[in-house]
Length: 300
Length: 153
Image 1 (tube, rainbow over the protein chains, first blue to last red):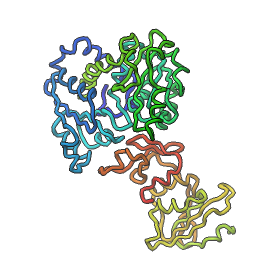
Image 2: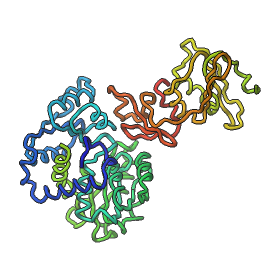
Image 3: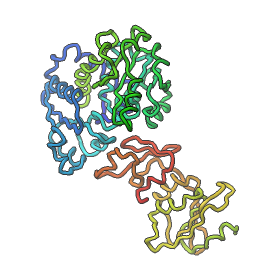
Image 4: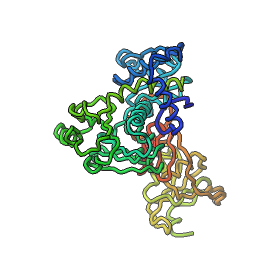
C-alpha cells in the first residue's frame, strides 16, 4: 500500500487491502521477530476521545516494530482546552513525530489534519465518520475465518453513527460480498454510505429483523446501540433488546457463522456466546496489533 | 417584449438572471451577497408564469456583471437559469449556467459535527453531485434546499 494518509476506507483498493493483510499474517505468525523493522520511528498518538483497543494496539504495533510512541495524553491536559485549533495542534505534533494517529469527535478531522502536515496521518476514528484501520483488522479476521469472496455478511446495530460500519461497508465493495444491514429504521445506514454502496454496484439488502437473514450468513458483525441516540431510556431499551443476540438466537444460525464486534460491547452479545465457536470478537481485537504493524510498516 | 418582462424595468448596464425556479430569487441574491444594505439597484419578478418552469423568478441587477464563481454557485440552486449581460440597454452576452465539479468556501456544512463548522482555518469544500452536493470533509450529502447552506444566509 502506498498512500500518504489513511483517511477513509473508500481510498483502499483490493490490492492495498490484500497487501496489508498478507504482511499482517507475517507479523501475526511471530510478532516478536520484527523489532528491527522501524527502529528509529516515532509515532504520535493523538486521541481527542477515549480509546482502549485502538490506542493500545497502535502503541503495541509501533513498539513491536522497534519504534516508539509519544502520546498527547487526555484532551483535558492538552492545549485544546486553551482553544487551540486542530490544525495548529497537528502542525506542532508533525514536528515531533514521523506519523500521526488521530482520533477526534468531529467528522472530517483526519482529512483536515492531513492538509496541514507532511507526515502520514492515520484516521483512528472521526466522529460518526470512518475508522479504516479497524476495518483492516476486521477484514483480516473475516479472511481468516470465512474468506473475503463469496461472503454473506450481516452488519447489525447502529449503522447510522457506527464509523466501523461505514468503513467496513466501503471496503467490502472491493470483494464479492453480499451485504445485509440490520437495524431499527432510525439507525439505518446514512445517505452517504448508501450512495457509495449504490455507486459501487454492491449487492446490499436492508432489514429491521435479524431473523430474516440469519440462517444464510457467514459473518454477523454486531455493533453497539448507544443510549444517547434515543430520546428516552424506555425507547432505547425496547430497541436495543431487539438487536441483542444470545445462544438461543444463534440456534438458527449456520454452524460456521463467525460473530464479530469491534468492542466494547455492553449487552448486545450475551456472555453465553463467548465460549462458542461463533465468537471471534476477542480474536478480532487481538488482530489489531499485527494488522496495525502492517499498516505502519507500509506507511511510515 | 412580453408582459412578463415588462413587470420589471429595463436596465442600462448589468445582469439579467432569468429562468430561476419560482420563489428562489432571494436565495440567488444571497449567493451574490446582496442583502439590501448596499447601493445595488435590483428589480425582482417572483413567481411569474413561465412555459418552461411553470413559475419562475427573474432578477435584474444594475451595474454588476456576474463572475464565473458566482455563476457556478448559482447553478446549484437555479440549474436552468440563463444569464444575460446588458450594456447600454442591449443584451451583449447570453449564457446558461453549468454545474461546477466543486464549490469552495460558499456553502456551510449542515452537519454540526463536521470539522469545518468549528474554528478551523479551512474553507468549506463540497463536491457537486448530479442531484446535490457532498461535503469533502465529513461526506454529508445534501440534496434538498442547497440554498439554505449558503454561508451568507
